[in-house]
Image (cartoon, rainbow, N blue to C red):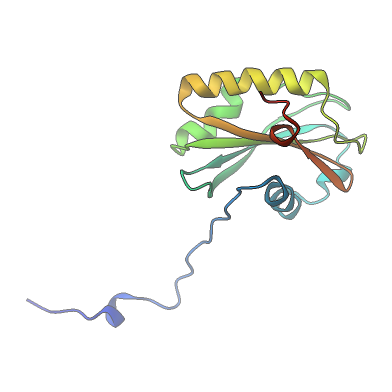
Length: 147
């Protein structure tokens, strides 16, 4: 039976993908701006779902819906589709405000609470909902709007 040394099993030319860890709203903001060019200038609200593993490392980034100038629908089926297929432990929601003002609307807060309730039923926690507007962002978790 042949014996192997560690050096013969490791291929140095194979890149191991680094999955970002998103444990703070600033990290979500940075991640989204890197992955979605000009998110702050998009003419329509676009909702994204970031699926995370148990250590808050990114499994996937999915566009959920593209809406109108000042609103977007966020069907639970679309929000959690990728999370379920990737066996995610949690999700972070994110969308842009074309107005440049990241202040959450009453509809943003209501929708987030509804999605968090669905996530509880599915066993997939909604950790946060980050709104990007212009150069700024707002975390619904930090503002207490998710309670």
